[in-house]
Length: 325
Length: 245
Image 1 (tube, helix red, strand yellow):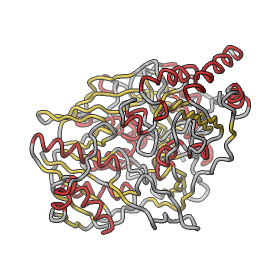
Image 2 (cartoon, helix red, strand yellow; image 1 turned 30 degrees about the horizontal axis):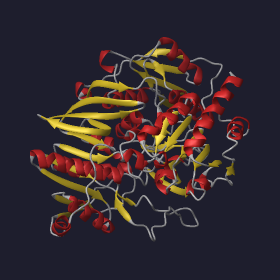
Image 3 (tube, chains in turn green, brown; image 1 turned 90 degrees about the vertical axis):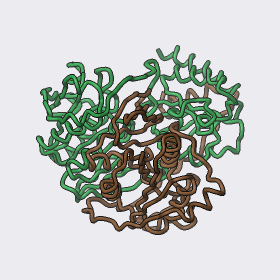
Image 4 (tube, chains in turn green, cyan; image 1 turned 135 degrees about the vertical axis):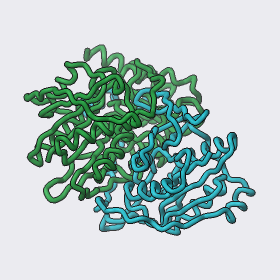
């Protein structure tokens, strides 16, 4: 099968999810005896495009002009769909990110393709095309069989490991035909906390709940997160009370995440919260209530007052970092 | 302003999810259904916009007659009228096609959806509807204002937000922050009984996918409890055993 991978960039650099998508696409190409082509859109540094070629892409297409510098889902989808037609792609893979979720359904309609969103594993391609995806907000998985000629798959960040390869694919300029109407959405401003790690892509997440008693107590959460190179998150009651922004809410009605390490502090573990974090590889729970349901869904637990345990944990992480740097 | 709000009928967030022994079907017994939470946010914002500037809010749902209680709830919250496309929602493409069919025949200034449904988590319908109707779309929007036929929106991105503008008509998917859901009052509940709920028949859509089985995540093995006086043991375990730091 020929695979087209749309790779996301930020500030001219490949996102971590881009490397995952490339490796995922390369694995599907390899298991089906096809080729992986990548496409990047907008301003991307030359060395970053070359780097994309080292993650399994036989070729890296790069579309860029003044109008494509900022993400416009409709225009980007047109570009990717045109590339897919050109290379006769059997499968188009994208990240299940905010941008990917905006583009992929449009590409599916343009190519009359079935779509599996939120894939968490490689498809089974021995007989047909079956892919495992998240369902019921992390409470379950669904195996979806796609029977259309062209197929679209979006991959959950952090669910497939990026692998660098020896071969390097060449970079080639690509000029898609895009109508003016596709640029109806205009970006006015991008607001980003540049020093912060993005929550959906973070490998480590430190999360706080109502047990922290108030927004003024988040200093230790941020300090621990910063020491671990982690993103910060929170439970629904915390964002509902405006202690933290909604964008930090993880759970069934917030963001579903799958970091390597999730540290839950002062979160009891309601079923809605567990749904959004259950695919984390390792879960640590710190809670003073030994009966908190979260302990049943955790790998490591400390029964204790967050205001005593977290400062100690910060000291221990500092010692660990000093010893391992 | 004429607004169409797309609502999904989904299991309540407290639901325990179970499947039949052959893993082929979702067990609906004992499940309470609700309006999908982000669709309810979209509905509330639609009401706020029409209360301010005038207009109507039509809700649309693709579902069999078991979804009518959910649709009546949307009417009780304040929608003007409702349409149910009489078909089980097979997949996102099928649902989008039904909505696009209806919206294409009844011109709306704005089509509002939730960010994603909490059952199949596709987040596909909004952009599919937009593509089918050749409309612009903005997804995961936490703030929406409209002035002189142009929407200004805050869209979520990884690690921040983007402020964008978009001319109407357009499709917008809502996330937390756009509005605070309302609890229907007695007057709303009473009036919902007599508000128009039209049933439309579905259009044919080619079937290109199906769910062949379900599974549940592996439960975790017994939690390892670490003494609060020995936090160093946790750091050690995360490094040497779990190998995550």
